[in-house]
Length: 305
Image (tube, rainbow, N blue to C red):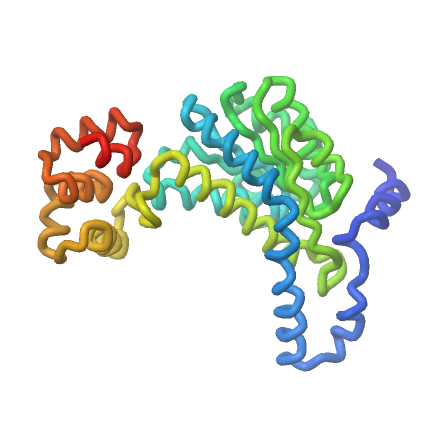
């Protein structure tokens, strides 16, 4: 793509427009600066409201994918790619899922997480290649993330995912973006001009983080990873998480700390199993079988006992 064409594209994007409220940014003191940034950030959640039906539809497709053994795969470049990886790597400790169930891909590979890999985002074939190396299948959901909505790496990935038959989701902060047109489900979070012109690590990045939180968290809730509002499938891999597991069992069953610890030890540190054991009064073995029968849903298992 020629520089002239790219400049023309950028001129149509709201995220690249100048924010009139911040045209004197370089004349503000520190307090004035952070107040202005905060004022802009307060608008972000409301900008997501029109997109919530599409977010919910994407969650439904992700839940179906998980149930069929499929994966949630985030694809992005720069800030967008890093946010996808961040969301992906937090799922195993929070919900005890394999690290292959939610995956983040970034243009330029793992090193691009820490240092920009120049030119990687401009190669659509690289997006296809990265997905092919994951052995993408029709059971997977691919979420292409691009604040601009035109990143070639993401567009290449979405085109390949479509050809494979995977469900595709496009996230952009600009309306009428190619990423949205290329996806089965289009999620637009139009946050408008940034306080620092074109710096989409700011409002656009925050909006993307919020959307990814919704997609993964809601899908995990609907996959039985939460009882009430407690993360009963957490992986207690350090002292803080062991303490959290004890608190979760105490909160879910209203038992004391000693009882919670004993139930967790008998359940091999499975908060979900310990909770069902304490609430039902049934043996660990029967609770384990019932959880398996109810696909991991604590409430359904409890009602069935």
